[in-house]
Image (tube, one colour):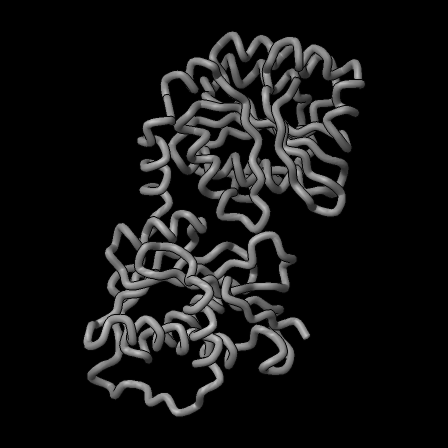
Length: 355
């Protein structure tokens, strides 16, 4: 049985028999029960519910089911689309909504998804409220509103920029101090909205990124997404695609989406490509896949003196292995990268400073 019902939400795998998995009837049933709970707390009020989701494969499908059910129950919807968990919580407060539903299974594998239920303060339901939702979901005597009382989609909007703006405005976030230190930061994108939000946040903080992991751990995919996000966010990015895996150019045209402002050099070595980009393209960022030779590091050192930031990957199973390899000693000495994102073979992700 892969349907887990608890006060923290409803999670399960997509497909299979209803009642045993997170199927469309189950999504409708638990969304309806949630709206009934919120309606009881706000008698006579036209409800507004915020809906946000992560980027796992089933996210759009489940979001459509949730949105349609909310409308059928008479609630209006603010759909913030791809949005982080704290971003959706902030949207509930910012929109003065009566609640919210986050469609995300967090760290669980791709076949999972979940409904995480929020109150009007953008907080998860408490124990008593969660139990009420579970009890109501077993009742079958609910009458849905007639046509004149159905809800409407009030807006479909991106809340990620507002989330980033509020993070940067926090009293404890000294943006200028961070910029002066020129931190190099790594990103855990897992099931992915972090892969959208974090590159933009890092762009605003002017921070470089190193992705560390063994072959097959997803380094290249994450690097490509960071390049695209930075480029589409307005940064000038130079990409040295030595092996043609990042942009997959054909007749000089990238077949993969690497962003509108990305200059791609393919078929040349990383060190040569870095120098060519510095001389001809005036990049703010330079991205390379797999640092493999001393000349790569020397070229990156020269670029760092020009104020360029980096996106790069490196082969290693752990930070200890990275430290033991003579090739990367110079990287540490230069402090080109100060933080590591470590991708393990089983897809677990950890972050630490590069020492």
